Image 1 (cartoon, one colour):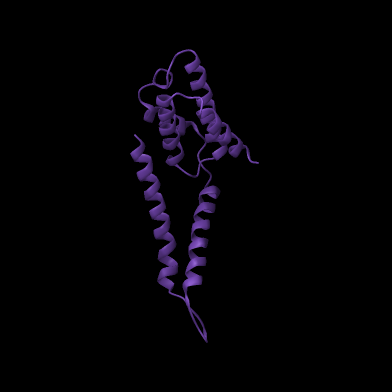
Image 2 (cartoon, rainbow, N blue to C red):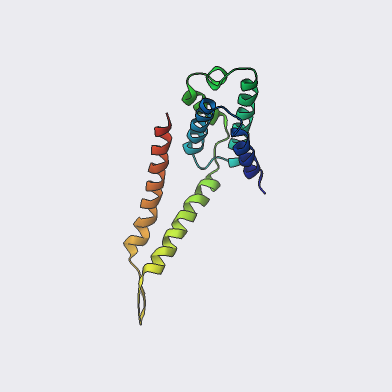
Amino acid sequence: MKKANQYQQEINQLKTQLNSSDSRYFEKLQTYILSQNIFYNDETINLQLLSMLQDLIDAEKDNSDATELFGNDPQSMANEILAQLPKPKLRDQLSMSTLVIAISWFFLLLSSTSTTSGIIINLWAFILAPFLELITISLILKILHKSVY
């Protein structure tokens, strides 16, 4: 099992120990950080979130809460955390985009009409569909990211 998945499982288990207001605070923070950029290294992000969650649990034991520990502006704090993370590699960004394009082309091939002389392929669909899907996915993630705070 990858370390990123192990960290995520630990996060899920530890979140159950939080009180409701701190749990909501951490959920929003987690969503904001994870939706910022899907190309960041999952292991690095989950390790950072796990560390923050453990600090929050310790703070709760000392009768403190998330706003006292992390401050009243979680968005700025999350942006600082993201700025400190190593930038995603171009290879990782291209691999995700290539996967979306390959899936799109696969389904376009499946839906193409075939005749006795071969398959009829709409060239414009093969060019435009993957890029429209990439743009749509990016917009959905940006909307999700902006809607958290």
